[in-house]
Image (cartoon, rainbow, N blue to C red; front, top):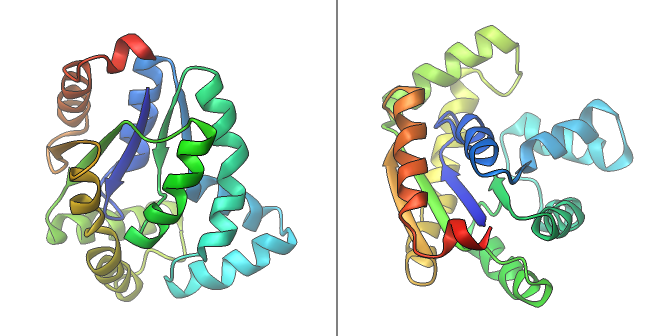
Length: 195
């Protein structure tokens, strides 16, 4: 089972990815967690990443692809993964696809969490206040949501033409979203049995 989560910042991708991974016994891989780990450890790559994150920009493709390759291959060998946070653009998806196919780790299902912008802003402002994340102030939040709309949202059309695409109302309660996503995944022929 190889699942990709797509959703705007604040849509709940991380929370749902963990729940899906736990439910189906696969690995949750978060590009954001990997990036923040390097930033926290102040590695050479982490210092580069920090500059992009602080500005609200996307981290360059080459950096993210290098960070993700080993975890994705390992997770696929162990039964599958739920990938959260990458790819974020059609260009990244197109660049990653032939590599993933060659390695036998290509995404099978895409789960899109759809949440209205007003709700995303509310959640992200709240998260920033709770966690002290420097990238969660309203100005940066609005910029990040514009970047998402311009660069990430077009991936839905890209994936709809190739993989199974499931869209769930991410504005529902956390448990309701989990139930809807899990039910949809269990309804995909052959997906659960393969994983």
